[in-house]
Image 1: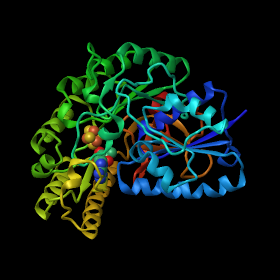
Image 2: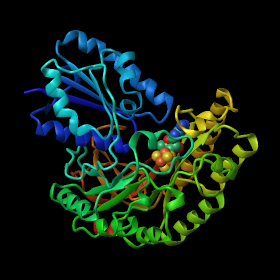
Image 3: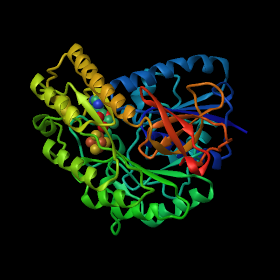
Amino acid sequence: MSTYYIETFGCQMNKYDSELVATILDKHGYQPARSIDESDLILINTCSVRDHAEQRVKNKIDDLYRFKKRKKGLVVGILGCMAQRMGQSLIDEKPLVDFVLGPDSYRNLPELLVQLNNGGIDKTEFENPYDDDETYADIYPTRFGEINAWVAIMRGCNNFCSYCIVPYLRGRERSRSAQNIIHEVKELVTDGYQEVTLLGQNVNSYHDGKTDFADLIRRVADVDGVKRVRFATSHPKDMSLKLIKAIGEHPNICNFIHLPIQSGSNVILKAMNRKYTREHYLELIEHIRTHVPNPALQTDIIVGFPGETDVEFQETVDLFNEVKFDGAFIFKYSPRSGTAAFKLKETVSEAEKTRRLQELNRIQKKITVEKNLKLVGTVQEILVEGRSKKRKKQQWMGRTDSNKIVVFNNTAKIKKGELICVKINEAEGQTLFGELLTSPAEL
Ligand code: 5AD
Ligand code: SF4
């Protein structure tokens, strides 16, 4: 039987897509390889969001030459956003690649593999039209995780933020039906998953004609046996008070909210086509802090967008000090051909982008440490995920509702997937260290 190996770059949606591809392959007689060395088919699922991400993939492809040399008949396929963006030109640049397949074309994979095995593939004609109807709603992904299962509730994006390539690669927004999603969540519970994460480029604009995202997440949280519900990603322009209240009212909807602001300056937000203001964002934060108990907030920032002066950058710095996020992903602006911002002249040097990135990271790190230190002495409920990579034997890890990692000594043979209480004794950078509370009197 032929075997496959998939390596995934990029976002959670890509990880989910790799799980879909695994099901498609399993149904067509392939099985997962124990290692990349042993596989007959190597698939790389790729990301195009920044140039740096594409360069990493290209290095990875170059690294595959040694496998190709060693094993006759080894097939290499490139999936995901880079396959969609570059199409044929990726094969021209990296001739070891046998085929490319974009995010809406994974159903074509078995047919393509048959053609390849028969030696009949035309390597000069790769075109990846996107299919605005494809949701893969009938395919149950082969989950690679044991505790958390990702569930894509929608695909595509209609927002066209001026810097972003995603809408050009993943097509227009389309939602799966709530009924279909609930059915899958019930199956996940039967299969032993404790946590589901609802995924979409902008989950706040989910709508199946009858159900909006706030109603959907309530229904998911109400499914018997679902211990935790997470979701990503939220767009501030579409985040409703109705949703915020739903998060606050359901104890099993996690109080962790990833809400990318991208910039603290209204001038830059306008140039980015984000369709909200700094004031609107701050108002949302206020609503969240009013209606959700102990919320944890995370954001994304792009520094060095064309036209971002010191004054505008300072507005982002001020916003960081005002909001005090629990975490932030900070990126240097990377021009993407085909986007609206690509036509704008870059005004911020690479060195200045680096300086801004480092400044924000420094501020954020300090805030994260301060926030984590405040948790020392408190009791937290964590969902146990398994052994800790960080420390010695017996050390296990789990996550709080607010997505913070807690390492503890597993003296009581606690199993993966259990919800337990730990007392936090120490905070070290991003990680908390806790002690298992075993007797009820200690709780
Ligand atoms: N340059 C830098 N960062 C980008 N992102 C999206 N496009 C770009 C780009 N061209 C960031 C945004 C988004 C995250 C997933 O990636 O911050 O929220
Ligand atoms: Fe890109 Fe904006 Fe869509 Fe997110 S919402 S995928 S940043 S266009």
